[in-house]
Image 1: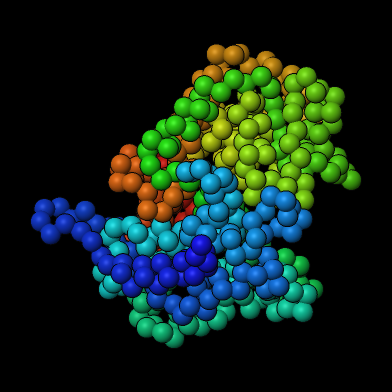
Image 2: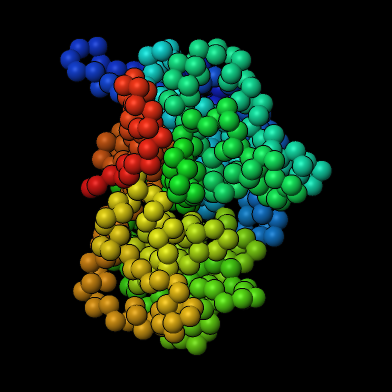
Length: 457
């Protein structure tokens, strides 16, 4: 069997050379306003980072979940989707969420409307694997004090190599993907002492005008926007997508509510602790999937089977507001229950229209549960069954929008639905178009305006 790292690098290099602009010669230009130039950067900023996938360099597999986790370099199989969950599986993979950056790069390479000439491009994609490049700073105590330098070498390269590309629109047309929460890359450069596990990538002045696609945004900075977390479901054809949605639609749901996540009790009152306490007292209504210690990271079967049997999936915030579990729940047709707007409504406007959250989710303010004595189970039991069915239908209608379909998927699938990558690219092109237009009109206040560019369906 070929080494997955070798295959990944070969196809990466092949596609990086072969990608070319495409568009119609006659009639309306199908690429008008949609041309993307992929910035050529030295492999030390992307491909070379994949060569060091052994546990000694950075663990792409969780050692605490060795029974279900893929070996480090195996995580690179299938262009970052990881190995299949089963030899006969066609859509399910043991995906490491930290490999969103190379996977996104792979998908951009195969899209149409690529422009070799940056002067003809509407946007510039920088294929920098930021989260992988950050690992030495967040894992090696020796490098902790140098974490403010994360990304500085890339910024220097972009300013030095073909500087006209960056200078053309002062970086307002550049975008890149960061596989993580923006909070993990936004530590003030001069902070002392340095906070473990974070860098200052988003604070680099040279990248201040870039658009960052992150798994969780900080809401107020105008430069970033959240895109869905990677799940383990990556269909390659429309029949595969439809087959899964049909399974989720007809699944018998005998459990009222489910929580999948860490089960350690907090030292002070919070929503997660309140949920665990209620589930312990209401075993007739609540199921818990223990994902402590990374048990669920590369084993989707551990939680997806349970989600298929539940009517509601509880999505309390953890260390940060958003959770990958939200998107697993949507795929399973399990109505998500949120306890604060930062968990999703104010994050993923390009993929999940904020105005429609009441149609496919339930909101219970966390303060009312933790301090007000509100019972989550009783609140959900009060939802009429017809309303639950209606919300489940809406959830499954939203599911294709948060799926990251497999690279090389069929034309039928690509033509039928827009997935998470398609919607992210559409969103970033809209945002860049608005900013560059404001530049041309010399309306600087419009460039930095925090305008709502969410999509209505």
